[in-house]
Image (cartoon, rainbow, N blue to C red; front, side, top):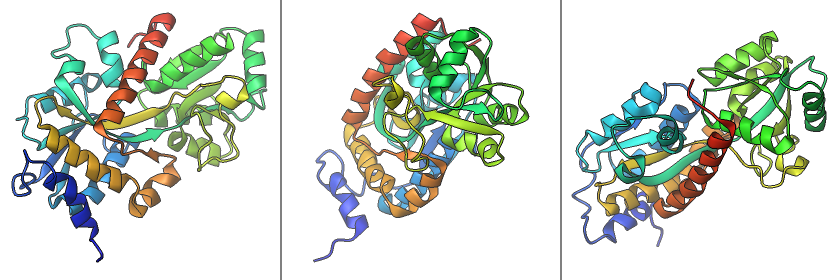
Length: 320
């Protein structure tokens, strides 16, 4: 007997004694996205949400709430009823805000429950076309010979790109000049014009300057090579074992949202993250769709939180 995709996805809900199929969801679900519409995190969220709607039998409404270094979106989520109809799409702010911001209105660790990591966005180190280094080893050699002179743009201050840059500086024993941008597109624009020497941005953001012949990619920040750039080596394989610092986004719920609802949402996301339709939309942009379990996501966040704290403290990273 062939079981439909929708029937299969309903199984986690039916298996949960505390939650009946008629109870949740019986109306549209809201995802509050902490980032502007059209960006990588927003695009990944919209892509997987669109695919999940059939299995859930309800629309997922995307609401972009920017501002306050993602605190606005997080606060809006916590101020909504914890009934499983409001979720937060957030990213590294969950890890870094407690280290960088004072007087937060909530404690990220106790206020939110991880649901699933939606996607990972490998980043790249790229240089402007006429930069003298042709590979990462030459880039490091040039930086050592000219300390504090190579400008590198990342979006934004204290974001995952900034953390990746600081981690690489420490690992390579070099000193660069950091330039913070509001977004990857802004950094890409300036490397295209030659205003900065290099960028550390996502693979999707770097496509315009590389496609125009205005920038060259030296390495990717992920542990393994990525399908969209199979010929580009990783920083890890170029002499920095274990280097793995990517941008990402994930789905969170208020802590009081019932565990069966969180489990069902994660189970549906896991299937959609692997669907052909979602992959067709996100693979060309260089996104790696994840869709892991709440516990897997929580474990991953614990390790990432520790790594981010070490880099922020040792590099003296601030939001300014």
